[in-house]
Image 1 (cartoon, rainbow, N blue to C red):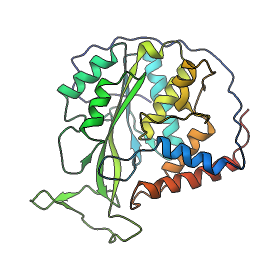
Image 2 (cartoon, helix red, strand yellow; image 1 turned 180 degrees about the vertical axis):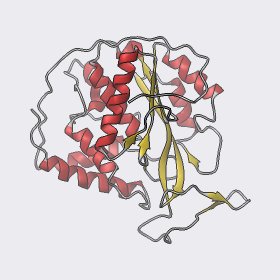
Image 3 (cartoon, rainbow, N blue to C red; image 1 turned 30 degrees about the horizontal axis):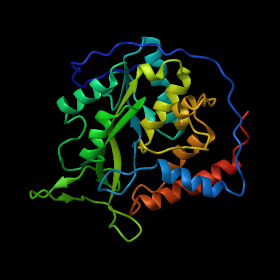
Length: 299
């Protein structure tokens, strides 16, 4: 899949830093039968997050267009293709050459400088201003994104649309108007949250030495789902524990696990117009339990 980028070129330089890949066997995943439901609910509650104020989890609608910058060409294409592959697994389509990038991934040894520069100079890009129909976690979390020291940081900008995906109109007084569609009720809302764009910055220094497949799957996971940067997958076989496991001297995951795939499957099958994120988390948890119970043991 060829990729292109139509956003303005950032003035901050990105230095290409190859990530050394090492072949390692996939560790066996053990699921504790009697505790599975409890473990799943804890995992979902730990990592899931909804846009501030909207109380509704977001996801992509049909198509994505990833752009990777700051790596050798072969690695950039591999990461973009890996994201496209994972997107296809949940029913999304990766657009082809010339598409407008909506997943922006930068790999740089100066991640903090880049993040601070983007937040201060490209505020429309990060949804800084209160624009009708655009939602984020808010300015506090945006400052956390800029100042983070995490190996990978991400920022999602979402769009509030009608239940059937139509953009919201205005009534001239700053109020959102829902055009068409069935009326909302106690069990559903008239709107849903779609991803508008996702910005991901990888600290090349901290990522050095990781298997590139593992790093690419980690980036794919946070590209396709809005996750809590402070969430921990402790005790759960998940690609989200990649850096924590390595830091603790444990063998890190080499790719998305059954738990990660089940979470994404649950997210993309959850009720998009649920009254709040709690209902969606219940949908995700129920589907995850079903998927994990049916999944064959990992090789």
